[in-house]
Length: 205
Image 1 (cartoon, rainbow, N blue to C red):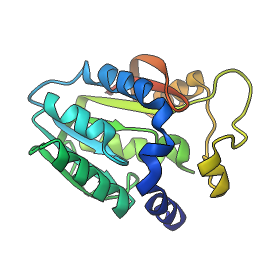
Image 2: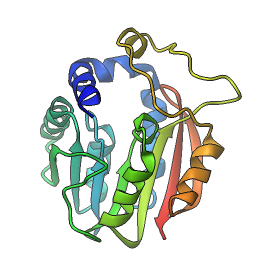
Image 3: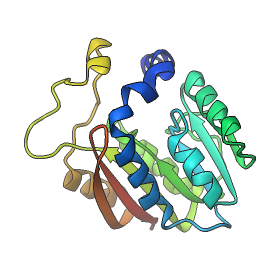
Image 4: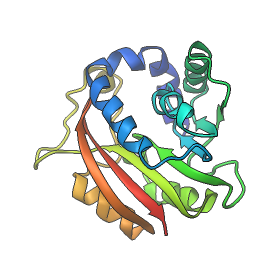
């Protein structure tokens, strides 16, 4: 995880600019995610990055807990929350495969654009299942492939830094894995974002 930590600390200052062309699709994905949230929810946003999902969803829920393995990304989330004057958001460093939370403590969770980066994504899903109450809502936005062409590093920033995802899934592969790892996928949509972005809306079975 040290390599990923270092990479995302370096990328954090330019991440929003590098993904600018996909922001409209990302906003649509946020709105789709928000449809299942309620004003009483305690929401966990893991791998929060620069806080796009967290800060957009915070007005829809009671409170948002954010974590990211990169301190620089956490700082970006906090700065975005301050700019938006969000008083119900708390961000800290944390590893999605070892969340610093007790069992069954949150109503809902979002794990955005992270599972495809992990060598063992099933460990992250197991942690989400552990901390989200039974029957709770888990949203998994994840970059996917369209068709049979694999991602060969066409993204200049990531390719130049010699960083590549650990997993390359099509949407149906992602959904199949989530079901196999113990989530019940209720529905999903694919949005045209920075890359094709599949949002799986799941129930913690």
